Image (cartoon, rainbow, N blue to C red; front, side, top):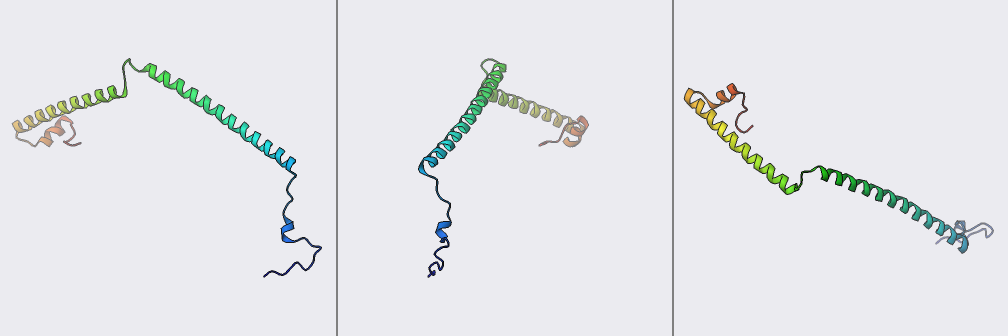
Length: 122
């Protein structure tokens, strides 16, 4: 148990705390702090609104450059159709090179090298 303060003239540990301002000065400080927060938030909001307006303008500009009726689904469908076409042509080419190799009696890989084509699966 702590001993009582032997010197009553010296301040006690609890009296070392800073004194609190009067309620009117505390209210004024709180109001100023609140006003500063509001001003900061207003600045941030204005900046964000400006950024949003710029992004919307860029989006409109890019959308105007797309051909009419173009949507992500249309682009994806066209890409898939091109991939199917490529695969069909690759299969035909591979078959023709295989026929050449068979007619010559050589390996398909040799014909691929001769024609400068990558191997299967590359």
